Image 1 (cartoon, helix red, strand yellow):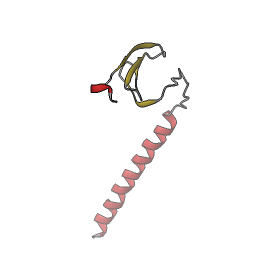
Image 2 (cartoon, rainbow, N blue to C red):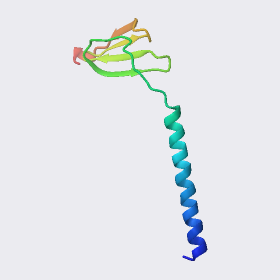
Image 3 (spheres, rainbow, N blue to C red):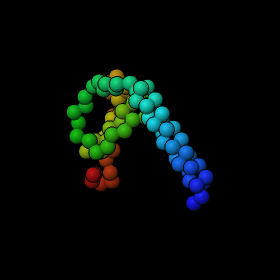
Image 4 (cartoon, rainbow, N blue to C red):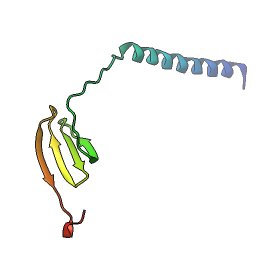
Length: 88
């Protein structure tokens, strides 16, 4: 590699490293300390848990019931599904 191209390569890599370092420092400075707070506790044996865009919580229990909670922990709906012939 000719000397001029070598210097350009070094400078290009140096610019990339400085840009990365700059973005990393900005990320550290702008990062807020996050504290998590327990909103409500659901003491139910579950198979699956998920949320939606409205911050509702959906739980599928081990006995095939679907329970919906709002973001404050209020139970909104529950439905139990039984498979054919009562088998689960």
